[in-house]
Length: 263
Image (cartoon, rainbow, N blue to C red; front, side, top):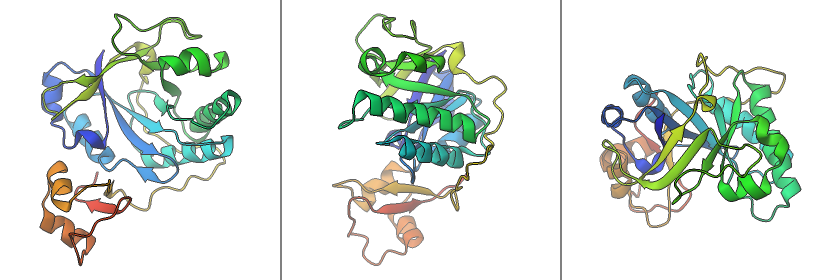
């Protein structure tokens, strides 16, 4: 299946145009760490589903231990609870600097097992070719692999998985309905989630559901309120009113800005 994966960095997406351009499947970033929810997640999910596109969810792992990974799995489940993923729940594992191979695999295993223990959903892995070939343990091959590998005719099969079930083959793709570049992918059947039952919390582990599903954006260095408004299809006065700003010109990196639009 021809696919893409998206996050807040694509801004507003016209998913009807995306579907008409031949895209058949979309993976959407849901969360990161133990507190962050992608500010466009709920809007992307609703609009993609409304356009008739199958949708999967992924979480960017930042854990540095198995305990932290389990907490991140709980957050992922909380963010996606009640929504219906047509793809397996994906762990995006990329930046594990400062960790031993054993620590990386312990965290990865804890996250994947946590997602399946805390929800009614199967899990899968997103990783680049280096991680798949040299870092991840062979026993993780029980989970489908979605590999990132660019500038090759086909993805490597020189991993414990053999041929991967998903292939991100470029991060410079262009698709109608999206301004700028977007990741392009090919997804096989094993990345799909038959039945697409809504995410439901299960097991004994408590999962703290977000108090609301307001969209929020974390300010980056150099951002202005005008640029944020343009990116997310709103206006400066709306953002000022929503966030009760006394000095709209004073933003600081890491600040959370409420955005209009809820699921």
